[in-house]
Amino acid sequence: MRLSLRGTWILAALLLAGWGILTVLSIRSGWTGTYSTGDLLRGAGACFGLAEPLDGAAQHILRLRLWRALTAGAVGASLALAGGYLQGMFRNGLASPSVVGVTAGSVLGASIAIALIGGFGANLVSLRAGLLSPALVTGFAFLGAVGVTFLVVSLASTGGRISIPTLLLAGIAMNTLIAGLLAALQSLTLKDYEVSRAILAWTFGTLDDRSGWQVVLVWTGLVAAAGVVPFVAFELDLFAGGEEDAHALGVNVARVKLLVLLAAAVATSAAVSVAGQIAFVGLVVPHVVRMSCGTSHRRVLPLSLLSGAVFLLACDLLQRRVFPDTGLRPGVLMSLIGGPLFIVLLVKNRRLLTSW
Image (cartoon, rainbow, N blue to C red; front, side, top):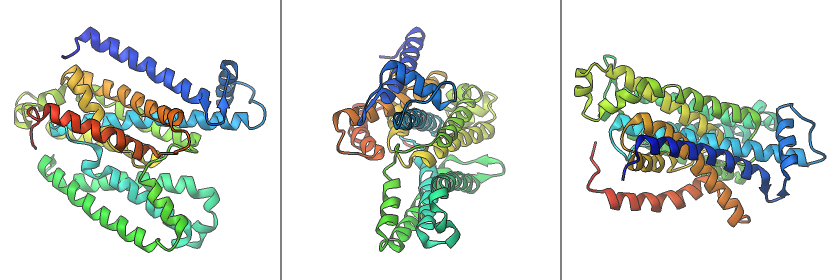
């Protein structure tokens, strides 16, 4: 059953409200205690210089919770939006940001930075690890994601046109190459337990100990990617009949594909560079939204953004409430939840799926 236009607006309002409520709940309570409403407002205001800080360690703890909640929401929204973009361009509900190598490139960049910080590179990096660690890991992850995306797009472009089959093959080839490079890097760092553990942990994703500038980075990527929606949503609807039909209807196919790839790359690279590899959000969320609200990308893309934020925030909050001592990484949690859910969706809708 597909939602009507009015139902879509109601759903969007509910999702937006849910995003706000889950953000407040994530900040309000945690392993170290619960904040009153007054302390929460005061502490949150102090993070932005609008109020006096809380006493002692209370302000530091609230700040960490605030950055975690803001990061989780933006990361979930970014990955789901990127998935919605790519599924529309590929005309296939099985597409995700990992298809074009964005995620793999980010993980490779972060792993190289971790190895450098651990002393496998220049001494200057190793000696100043305490100061540079977060900036190096996030910066290298972002550069890796953007670099791999542009390389894949360049390989798939001929005469200013991007070939979707070639893009897919180039993405598969790049993912395979990066997997080999990551295995080699892990093999080289195997004797150093801390470095090897840090590289492995990045592939599971993390929302712990995020900083204000990382929040700014992921939100900047999300806003930039969301700004593309009005320029490609209608055109992506016309893509459903094939690129030739879209071109015959006046769509600048090359421009639309380039904008979609750039938006998906920016959103994903910003998210993965801040939080590591978090699976299935960009695959499952837009797929479920499309099943519920129809195929119009003027609905699918904004609702995917909102649903992704709510989904990751809710899962993170549930994990911290129900299993506070397990410390499951968000990438692992998403795989445990998203994997079975997507299998169910495939079984229920296998007759509707089309191949590339």
